Image 1 (cartoon, one colour):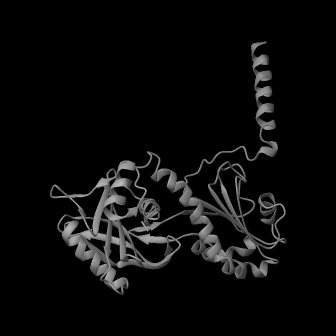
Image 2 (cartoon, one colour; image 1 turned 60 degrees about the horizontal axis):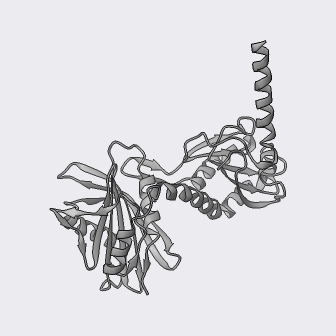
Image 3 (cartoon, one colour; image 1 turned 120 degrees about the vertical axis):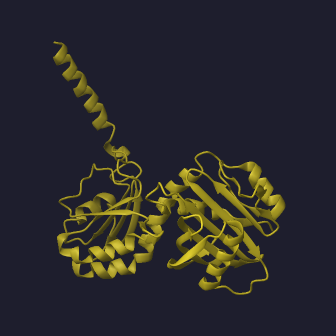
Length: 331
């Protein structure tokens, strides 16, 4: 009787679980690691796998290869709805098996580019690209390449922002930076000024902040006298500042990747990402540098990590870039 009663109880619980899923959204929570991207690709389009992976991912060198995302490709027969993928990319056309997953995610979608949250799992982010026919998959992948990458990174940044500010914001430092430098910057709790030989790194045109476990550091430098800059000048400038304030760090030039962006949606900026090393102290790690011209003149934000115990370091640079992106100048 007890066993029978137990079975009845489990049946009732199961009914409640199933009835609770229905129209309210997917019942499965994210179970994969947060930087994993699953992409669905039909066997007829496997020749596009490399192009898909190049679209979805960036790999930086610090100096070891450090991709932002882990990518897993699946054919429609392999993909599991209940596996809890944080990010899903579907490249399809109406003639292919993968189109069934596209219609689950985007019921009213036709050809084109689409995004939607909470489709197969709670908290997931799904990107879909649908071409009129299989022969146009490559052309549509190329057409929406920037849209795919931007949407994926924007969604990932939401997760990283939660990690960056999980302890709250340092309101004291925000007031201090506004008063001394005339800038607004949302510094998370746990960050403090860098100290060099027991002296706080805080000058009229330069200050540095640091956070431990793992070691992360950010340098903010303003110089209205610099009329022009390129990647080579930025590397020399970083090396010069590092010689003074980082104990002799140097950029490993062979690892540097140069990109561009719009900082604060206003300032065209150069972005350098690569590795730094210090041959005297036998240490090193990744760095990212953002430089732009503003109404204050030349402005540079340098971000670095020292975390030999961590295999994946790029996410720490991306978290610091989120902090840097809160920078605004007092009018």
